[in-house]
Length: 145
Image (cartoon, rainbow, N blue to C red; front, side, top):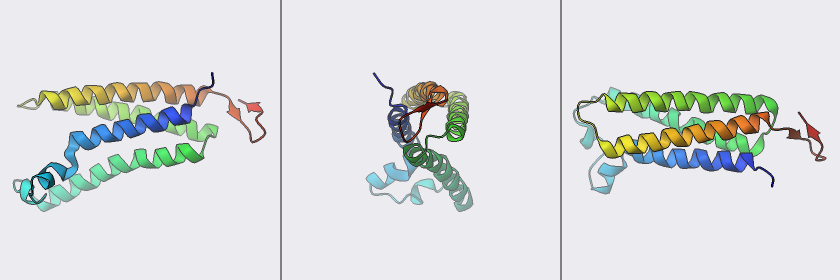
């Protein structure tokens, strides 16, 4: 049985992104209820909203770029960089989970989702590590390490 590391990695990133989309809600919940995203954020200044949205866009865009790169790139340098990226995201997810637990009002379904996302991240770390260590096939099918 061959390991399709790239397919597994892409699937895990997509599952992670869907979970993050649900967790952050990206302003979709107010829209579903006919409210303006800006109206739902009255307690926050527009500058804070803008900064948070840019950070969220970056957090979301980096895995999207990793998915695209994983489809088209399998060289050793990219595999190492990608593995480092998955570790970085796992650290961020753990920090996010801890910070969510420290909130005055814990929302347990969000905590549960963050635990699931953290575990998905650990699985992504494992598969990315296996891919990083796997031999590289050249265009003729020969193995190179």
